[in-house]
Every structure is written in structure tokens, then in C-alpha cells.
Image 1 (tube, helix red, strand yellow):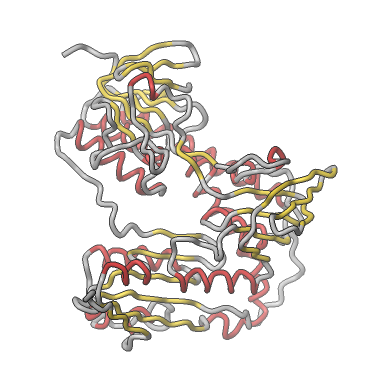
Image 2: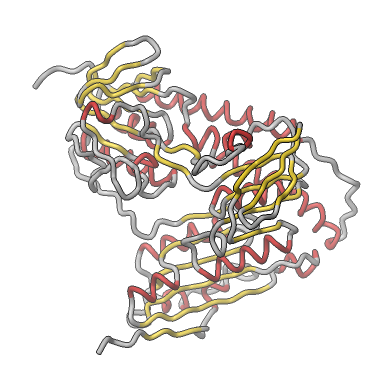
Amino acid sequence: MAEFDVDLFVIGGGSGGVRAARIAAGYGARVTIAEEYRMGGTCVIRGCVPKKLFVIGSHFRHELEDAAGFGWTVPPASFDWPTLIANKDKEIARLEAAYTANVEKSGAQIVKSRAVIEDKHTVRLLENDRRITARYILIATGGAPNHGASIPGIEHVISSNEAFHLKKLPKRIVIQGGGYIALEFAGIFAGFGSDVTVIYRGDNILRGFDEDVRTHVRAEMEKQGITILTGCTVSKVDRHGEEFTTHLSNGSSIASEQVMFAIGRHPAVANLGLENAGVAINPNNGGIAVDHFSRSSVDSIYAIGDVTHRFNLTPVAIREGHAFADTVFGKREVKVDHANIPTAVFSQPEVGTVGLTETEARAQFSHVDIYKTSFRPIKATMSGRDTRVLMKLVVDGSTDRVLGCHIVGDAAAEITQAVAIAVKMKATKADFDATIALHPTAAEELVTMRTPTARHVRQAAE
């Protein structure tokens, strides 16, 4: 076998690429990882982590308002956006340093450069025009914001990338999109005091989520003063000094200080040199086509994470990176099970979900039982806040197996992480019922719902 400069060359220093590099190095592989921007990737630098910090920060206004119902007298509070940004930047810098240190401790080498594939075993570093040969190449370049079709004034639109670095908090902002990122930033900006309008082309937000979740989240967001306009899109953005006019497809217009698009992300496959090695693109999603072991159409080139556009979640990329290293360098085949992946939307209210929606379950199973409850959380009984929690279990009526769990409310993500273990283990509704409630909590509702709120039986075709 021909000798190579390294055993593994990883393109992309995000969570998935870093995990793969560290595990491979732990197996004794000679590893180099290239990152053109900052170690940590989208999640750490300009995604999940800073987003969650912003979400936490935006909650304090509600906490201060709610405190009065519990006897607290809080002096008028003020908020300073530049302080938030500065402290967020410090934390992200700390995490980036930790990622770098962990990679180096593993024995892998980091190069700060964009890397382009020249053939199935060669990459070129653009920083110094250096070529490195590798027995295996792993592509972990993630994804990037997608603004969609070009419209007049598209150059005035920001994405989530720029939202983390705004010089000042906008008094008014228009956000186009109805998924994770759009709704999370809608809650963030509204929490900090901005007037927020959400524009979405579909009939309701959170496409792909359970219908009850979609309806509940929209109602709760609108209670908080967020305007949600569905069935329309942004057709043009005009700039007037420091302000903008957003024109909609329904003929109306909205004035604001910022316009943000969060309509989706696309795999970062451009200008990687994939064609030089013959790496195939999946025609259905635009990501790199891979098999169950994350192997591309070229046997020496693999891809993990968002660049494959399978399940665009950081923990999935990490699991795929680890499985790749185990399979290729640990000499034990590991497939990632993509079924029943829990996910959260850190909107306000928060969403946690795992397993099948009611619609999906009814399409796959002949008998489906639904257990659903909506209630006022104990905190709201004292604070006076007009809000309700939603909890829903989707159950196979024939086997009693819990197929899905959907929660909207405080700590929904934390609760769902624990419930996901039960769903993954194929727990039954009887298992839930046999669990003694932990009182007083919101989560106890998951083990105290005894009577189905709906039962669906699909008639066999004649």
C-alpha cells in the first residue's frame, strides 16, 4: 500500500470533525484537521451555544415581571446589548480554545486554512498552496445560511451569523422563516424588548412538527406580542438610511431596523473540489451522498454532519464522527441509528420532541392512541402570566408502545432528553403508568395521563 502523509485528513473543525479527529488519533492514526474560520464550527461559534446564551439572557425580562407575584419588588431594570455581546464573545473564545486544546492533546494536528480536494487521496491547503496526501479524507464542513431566491434588496438582509454580532439591539425586526432558527431568534429579540414580526410562507410555523405543537407554540408566541404572518413571503427590501421597508407578497409592507432571513441552511459543498475526486451529491437534498457508514461514492472519502443534509443536529454529527473513527480506525463497524432522535426548539415557549408525530404514527400504524393535556404551570398561578404547557404522547394502540412524546413549555428540552431514553428502549404506555409521579412537577403529567384523548383506527382497504 502506498505511503501517505497522514492516515486521516479532516476538512472542518466543527463538533463532528473534531470528534472524528480525536477518536481516530486515539486509535493511533496520524490525523490533520483543517479549519478555515474558527475551531468549534457553527454550533460553538455562531449556532447552538451563543443562541442558547441569548435565549437565557432574554428570559430575564419575564423573570423580573413574574417576580412581583411572589412578593418581590424589583427596581426598574435596564438592559445593555453591548455587554451581552462582549460576554458572549468571551465565552465563545474560551470554548474555541478548549476545542483546540482537546484536539492537540489527542495528537491530531490543526492547520488554519481552507482545504480543497484534488483527488481521492490529496488535499490542497489554500493558505500556503501546500498539498497533503491522506489514506482517508473526512468532509465535515457543515452547512451555511440559505437566503433562497434572489430578491431586490437581498443585500440588506442578515442571517443568524450576523445576528450574533449586531452593534445594537433593533427596536423592530422582521424575521422570515418558520423553523428552529427563525422562532428562536424571534423569542430572543422579543425577550430583549424588540418588536418582532415573523413571516412564513406556509400555513403554520414549525413544519414537520406535531400539529398540536405547531398550533400551541404559535398561540403562545402571539400572546407575547410577536406578530406571525403566514401564507406570504418577503418580495423586496428597501433601505432608508438606517431603516428598512420589507415588502410582502400579499401587498403589505413593514418598517424595521433589521431584516433577518432564517429560511433554512444548505450543505457547505461548494468549492471543495468534490468533482475532482468524483464525490457524488445526493440529488434529493444537495448534500454529499453517503451510505450507513458515512462513506461517499469514493471509497477513501467520507462525510458526516450537516454537509450530508441527513439530520442537521450537532449531536448527530458528533455521533457520526465517532462512528466513522470506530469503523475505519477502530476496526469495528458502527452504524449510527438515526431513529428516534430527540430535538428541541429553544423558542419561547420551548419545544422538546422525540419520536413520531400523530400524523406520522397514523400513517404507519393501524391503531394509534393519543394522550394529551394542556395546563397552567404552577409558576403562572402566582405570577399571573397567561401561558399553558402542552404534553402529548403518541402510542401504538396495538402494542402499547410509546411512539412519540411532544412537550411545549419550560424545561421541555430537559424533560425530553430523559423521555427519549424510554422511547429508544421501546417503553410502553403501561411502563409510563407504572412510574410513580414526581410531584409537584410539570413532567408528572407524562405518567398520570390515563385516558386517551383520541383513538384512531385505520380501516383495512377492501
